[in-house]
Amino acid sequence: MWVVGAPDRRIVSYASVRGPGQVRLFANVWLFPEYTRCGFGRYLLWCAEERAESWAAEATLGVHVTMGVSWISERNRRAQRLLERVGYEKIYSFAHMELELHGWQALPHIH
Image 1 (cartoon, rainbow, N blue to C red):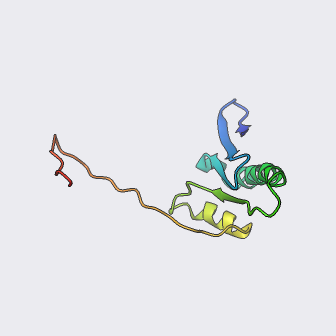
Image 2 (cartoon, rainbow, N blue to C red; image 1 turned 30 degrees about the vertical axis):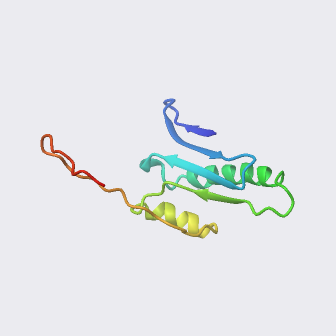
Image 3 (cartoon, rainbow, N blue to C red; image 1 turned 180 degrees about the horizontal axis):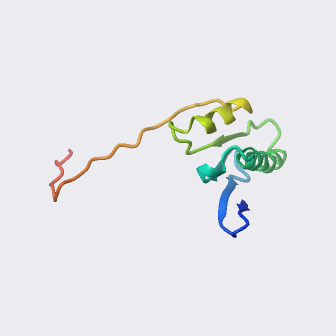
């Protein structure tokens, strides 16, 4: 894990990569919106990629190792463009659905 702190000691960005010893690695890069365009996101993504490369080098010969970056909001076009510029491609997305309840309501029984 890598952490970027502000002069006031607040954490403003971090990144992690997980999956050593596996063929599917995942990276997460997070930062406060006011710190976009400072280079933190790209730098932390590079750190995660470097770590993933070192793990991939230890993989069994002939095994295809991939790294994905997960949890990018559909509304976060800036992050999506960054990933596209450095060679990532969108494979899938999912939607979060929510139901607002007004008081207690019994849920229908599903068979």
